[in-house]
Length: 199
Image (tube, rainbow, N blue to C red; front, side, top):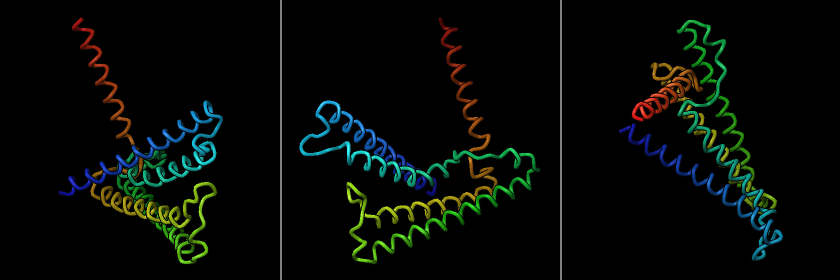
């Protein structure tokens, strides 16, 4: 039941991130075409002005949205040279400690984002303040930031349990990622050798 729910959540996350990437590509492509062939303006629009801002905001939301997803997949880059020199119990302790610090850090940033959101939302004059070109409300941006870091904290908290129970070694991409790459290379080499053998 939990695995089905988790796969469903991951499918939704992957779909949203795919649409974000497609939107960034489409806006950037549209801006280039208009600038190159229509002198920078078409139908009264100047995508070279607002296109950059929209692309930057989508990219910002893409990063914030993808943080917890990448963390859950265990593919964040980590430096574990010193930790790997320790015996297994000590290594487990430091991995849990690092993950706990990640939870605290994410909660602090989530709280800071919420405070900024509350400021822009509660004051009527500030509620209409937004980005320069598209007037994307600041309360929305900071609210999204707060929610994204809260999700990161929740994901890291679950990772503590997984490290404690031995389901994963650390919070970041460890040697499991290297093993998967080696396995993929070996599989590809085996397939190539089989194809050449048939010839």
